[in-house]
Image (cartoon, rainbow over all chains, first blue to last red; front, side):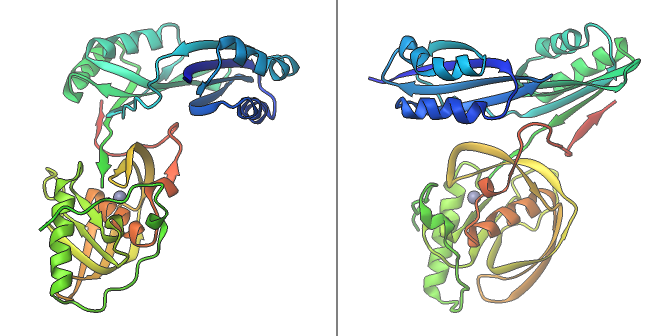
Length: 175
Length: 167
Ligand SMILES: [Zn+2]
């Protein structure tokens, strides 16, 4: 009986991490499922679903040589066998404004109360070092409809006058 | 009429190049009726191409008229279709009956000029935009053995440009 695992790796970004880790997993008889890798501020992280016959211990043993050599931190959880719980976003939201504390919390709270379930979130800081601005891109599902999110947006903008927010429907065309 | 079986990737036949239709006979009309019924039974129901049911001829059907508030030309049977002009581009998320349980972002032209024959072999020309133009580009790709997964763009940092609710 094979078991599904969620493997999380964090470390300093360096060439060859994905290749070395996946090679070790392949040689150990693991099957890869979905994966998402991200680089952020010179750091590397990947979340990777895989199935194999072994246990958390087997996987740790399998990966220790690579993990030690590349000075990565490894975390493994057993997960339910649902590697393909696909969920397509139906709304994209972009937000930008002068950088200040609390933007992400304020914006996501307002939208969460209006039924937004976030599937992807990316934020970035741009601008001059002494005049930074903040950009956030969100994709998600509008569980109470996109109109509810637009209403929430009006409320948000009444308070946060300098924020620029766009709410866009994502139409998935199935052909 | 009958609902035909849809080939699904990784069936390699979806990568076949389809050939021009030469004869516009009763057999073709019967096939088109079945192809349309198959399209209408599908999850999206806005388009289908003959190679998706294992017939490698340049035949597609597009009908986006169920979609509200868009420009369209109604039900279109496209035989030996060719796009002769492309303008603008837009990213949107597509799915396909031949690629189950997956959707992805694809760049398509926002406006096209299409030269085609209809089911009777008569030449027709259309200027199309938006949703209808996207559907036609998707179906014509099938005739060349291309799937939308051949044209994916990154999930991150994409530019959705439709329906902007802005303040
Ligand atoms: Zn398709």
